[in-house]
Length: 482
Image 1: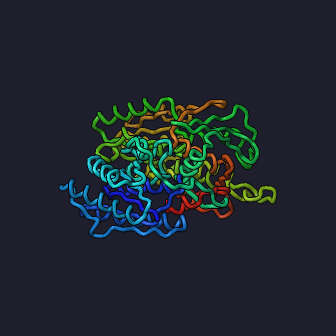
Image 2 (image 1 turned 30 degrees about the vertical axis):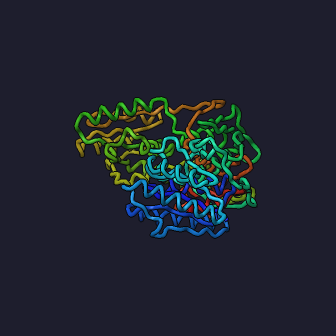
Image 3 (image 1 turned 90 degrees about the vertical axis):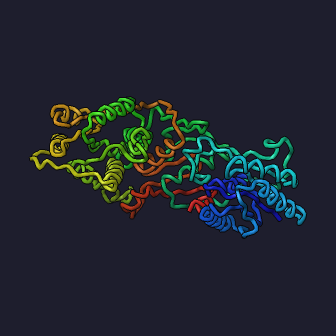
């Protein structure tokens, strides 16, 4: 019999993740879990129980969770806590259990007391899951965080004494097919990292488009020469646009931040708007993830969108390939450009959900001219500054000719070249794999296949970043992620 002992802190994930690491990576599944808790973490305790129940179902083994009143302690009495923990571990050892004690959750003082109790009572193993940049990843489950940012320390490293862990190692399941989201792609990267598959190619069918190296940072190299069917996959140009949309690497991002600061200091209300290509390249996504644009947890400006931009992106998203048996699952589906535009529609919906206002000059114009007039008219009506972001030279020049009265155009400069190696975060790589899969229609990475386009794909699937994954041997991970 195997028992796992830990405390409940203010982060349920910090309680659960070390256990999940032992189960998934080392193949060590407990029969019983003992939660030491205090009355201030009752809700967190319930969440931990729910997660352990998910774990139990996913791995096909009943795990009994103990959280009775006799495991409750008072943080103001550390000596009583140490005695409670030592007595529990000692009893479990006398009853013949293999006991693992985890000291990750809670305050470090309490962790030290728990480790002391574990050693005194001869626990078989003591663990601590270290998380780099914990402020960024607090509240996330094990396979939502880059595995390179996590390390499980064991008894030998913590105390200098060898632990005794009867573990079977990581085991594969039969390859399966799953519905996943863009965020779930982190679990795939983590699994490849754990399996030492840290270098792999990206392909569409049997045609390579690039390669990945998973290290402290990720590296994505895009091939010098790419040969893809233009009608079905968009050719080499769509690879470029998908990488820009996913990587969101811009040479003058710092200049944009400085411009925002300057406009905020004027005291006038500030709105940020976008032209059509800025939506398709997911610039709002990057803005919403830029910490410099927040104060006290709130955005420092509002959003606005041009009525003409809304019409343009909608028109482009509705372009379809012809019916053809040769096109298989792509028949009558969105063209590659329409798939990119669908990413733009998702960005537009995000802005609307955040309360973005609609700008319509009601002028008899079209395209870039109408977009510029919409934003200029809005700036004048609101007596506000409207910073409009574009990646297109012609659109920028159109707005530059009309600037004034609050209209401030800004041209972002993308950073891309074929044959280049992008050094990026794991999150940026994850997002780029998603944009490649949905715009090219499919993507092979390592031995897995992602499909971004299929018959019957709905607008809701675009909003939730739904993908089809096949060949993955660790489907239980998605069962735990829920």
